[in-house]
Image 1 (cartoon, one colour):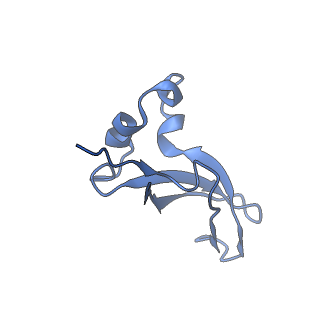
Image 2 (spheres, one colour; image 1 turned 135 degrees about the vertical axis):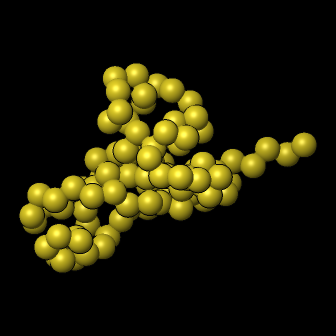
Length: 89
């Protein structure tokens, strides 16, 4: 049986997010703070990637292959989450 591997393009440095800030509407490259789950505890970044998608606060992110990231706007200081579609490798 072949194992399918999904990877987050942002976590792995393949892509960046450029979009308008939902607060100030400034269009710029936002500062990636990392995965939302990485802020849930000291040892979360060391746990299994697939398992932590179960507790990211977004229903079905594991099944739909979505990695939820926290972003910071340099212009207004707003922080917001962005769902990133994982890619099949």
